[in-house]
Image 1 (cartoon, rainbow, N blue to C red):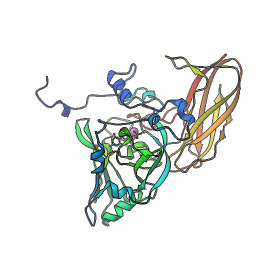
Image 2 (cartoon, rainbow, N blue to C red):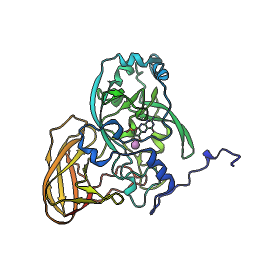
Image 3 (cartoon, rainbow, N blue to C red):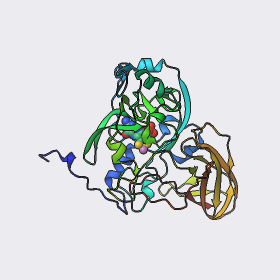
Image 4 (cartoon, rainbow, N blue to C red):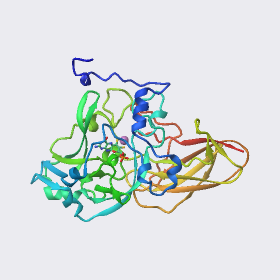
Length: 367
Ligand SMILES: Nc1nc2c(c(=O)[nH]1)N[C@H]1C(S)=C(S)[C@@H](COP(=O)(O)O)O[C@H]1N2
Ligand SMILES: [Mo]
């Protein structure tokens, strides 16, 4: 047994290839993704929405929730503590928002960073009910010297020997954007424990790390927030040790509902010959709309039909009719947004496994 606190030892991880480690499997069991066939739902049922929890899910009883407060301090006119009941009494809005984890696709990189080994499934869309964050910031009154605002959850632990509560920051202009919400309900129900009960943030258009769960403290700042989750990770990096560039909004991406039926273990697909509809979803970041989705069947690209848009921050459904004839096929999809961003065929390498928006392709055998 260690006699010294071992949690402050230097992190010994480095990029790896080959089999997944036991630690990666443990993280994968804790943080499930959406089952790709459930991309058929416009709104992901709450229990099928992906999860990413760095530490433990905090135990918050109904009594704890009833006594929950959100404190706002730092460079504000008035340091305040607002009871959750008062936040819930503010004008409520419901927004359909697609969230994706910035680490989605990490497990597909070679070499890969040992962490949550997502393949493609760290995405989901929910209807979030809450009130614009702006309302509570304005109650406290941001002082003019405020250049950054940090948001803190009650969950804590270690990463790379740094002990911290999960925390992230936003610049004041974004924090005061009407679309950034303090949220207490998901798909019309109270937040589930794993999704941040009783209060979380939703920062639409951004990768999921910005949407702090179990939120109880806000700190306005005259200097940039330097918390571990802000500067130690969530940066695009080519080499370990470099600062890199901060990760912000989601990259354009699309996924397919795997057609046909799977083999239990390999998940390879068997499809019967004849007419087949291939369904999927496409999204981009920062509220940028999807312009086009193309599907390749053995290298021949065709335009998919797009469903009507379902909100500025929600994914867009698409479908392609295919007359399947017997044989082996590789099916891939590619989205392009109205700003002209499109998915790369090969993933853009990232040391930490972030931002992988390479093409989703599926092997299918038609019988
Ligand atoms: N307090 C807290 N907030 C958090 C996290 C966390 O570990 N703790 N994970 C973040 C990350 S990395 C993602 S991708 C989203 C996931 O939200 P979900 O689990 O509700 O899908 O929550 C974010 N908010
Ligand atoms: Mo994430």
